[in-house]
Amino acid sequence: MKELKVTPIKDGTVIDHITPGHALKVLHVLKVPESTFSVVSILMNVNGKKGKKDIVKIENRELDPKELDKIALIAPKATINIIRDYEVVKKHKVELPKEVIGLTKCSNPTCISNAREPVESRFQVINRDPLRIRCYYCEREPEDIAAGII
Amino acid sequence: MPMNFKHRDIISIKDFSKEEIEYILEYAKHMVPYAKAEKHTTLLNQQILATLFFEPSTRTRLSFESAMHRLGGSVIGFADPSGTSLKKGESLADTIRMADSYSDAIVIRHPQEGAARLAAEFSEVPILNGGDGAGQHPTQCLLDLFTILTEKKKIKGNNVVLLGDLKYGRTVHSLAYALSLFKANLTFVSPETLKMPKEVINECKEFGVEPVSTSNLEKAIKEADVLYATRIQKERFPDAEEYNRVVGSYKVDNALLQQAKQDLIVMHPLPRIVEIHSEVDSTAHAVYFKQAFNGLPVRMALLSLILGGKKI
Image 1 (cartoon, rainbow over the protein chains, first blue to last red):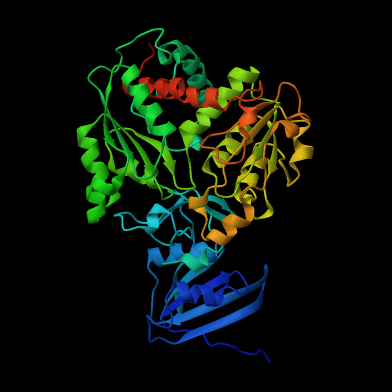
Image 2: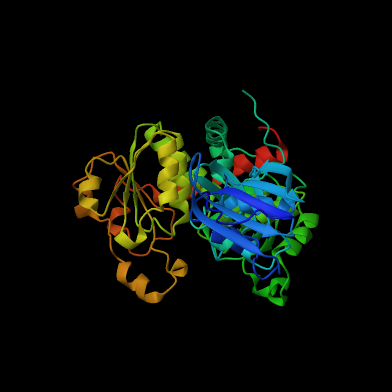
C-alpha cells in the first residue's frame, strides 16, 4: 500500500526540488510562520528522481515574483507550483537574475549599503552553482547568503 | 588603439581591462615632465576638481590637488569632514549631489567600503575613488604598477612579495588583482592573523597565478624582484589588543636586504611606521619616495583623460 505522507493541497503553492536540508531556510525567507496563518507542510530529504530534495507546501497563498527571487538565493533549483482546486495552474523554475537588488543585506558591517543612505543592497551573481554573489558596493562575497536575507 | 575615458568614473581597478591600464600607464610616462614642471599645460583651464576627504590623507589628496593645478585647473574641497554638514547628519548621497553641482570631477576618500561606488550613482560628474575603507584605491594601484613598470621595464614575470597587513590593507588587495592580470608571480608574507583574504587569492587564481602564502620573510626575500611593504593599520583593527600583538612583526632593514637580489626594489604606499628602517632610504633598493612622486603623473594622466578627454 502506498503510504501518503502529506496530502495534496486544494489551493496554494508547492515549492519542490528544494536543496535537501534547506526547507526551513526557505520558510525563513518567506517569513513563515510570522506572515501567514495558512497550513504549511514540510518534507525533508524526500527521494526524488534526481536524488534527495525538500518540499514545502503552503495552503491558500500564491507566491509573488519577488518572493521567488528570494528563494532562488537559497534553493537555486527549486520549482514553484501554483495550485488551484487541486490542479497545478502555473509551474516555473526559480530563476536568479543577474543582479539581486534589495533581497539580502551585505554581510560587511562597514559596507556603505548598510549605512543610512538612500540605496538598496545590490549584488552581482558571479556563479550560479555553487551560488556566489558579490556586493556591488564593497565587492565582498557574503559566505552565508541566507543569513543576510531581508 | 585610441580609448575614450571622458567622463568615466575611477572606482575600482577591476573596472579596467589590461589594455586600458597599459594605455593609462603609457600616458602617465608622457606626463612626467609636466609633473616635474619642466613642461607646462593649460589643458584643464576653468575646470574644478572637488576633493572630499572624509578620512585623513597626505599623499593622495596633495597629489590630486597638485595634479589638477599642474594641468591648469583649480581645486575645492575639505580634508576633514568635521567642519561640514556631515556632522549634522547629512547623507553621503546628499553631500555628493551638492559637490557635483560645484565641480567637474570629484575625488572621494571615505572610511566605508563602497562609498565611491555609491557616490558615482548620485553624481553627474566623474568620481575618482581616493580610497574607500579597506576596499579599493585604484589610483594607488595604478601608481604602484607604474612604479614597477618604470623601475623594472615590465610587470609580467617579476617575483613580487606583498608584506604586512594583507587582511585590512586596501592597496594590497587591488594590487594583487592587478599584478595577477599582468601575470606577475606573487608571494604573500603576513602574520597568521593578517593573511590575504580567500576571495583575493581566488581572483589571482582566476588569472592563472598561484600565489604562495608564508610567514617567512627571510626565505621570500631571496628570490624577490619587488618587495611591497605595508603598514599595519591601527585604524582598521576591531580591537587594540589584536593590533598590539602584530605591530612590528616584520622589519625591512639592511641586514635583511643583504640576502636579497641586488636589483630588488622596495616599495611602500606610505606612511611607514616601523616596517622599513630609515637606513634603507639611502640604498638603491628604496623606491618608495619615487613611488609617491609617481602618484602625480598617474593622476595627471587620469584627470586629463577623464576631464579633457584627450592627450596633451
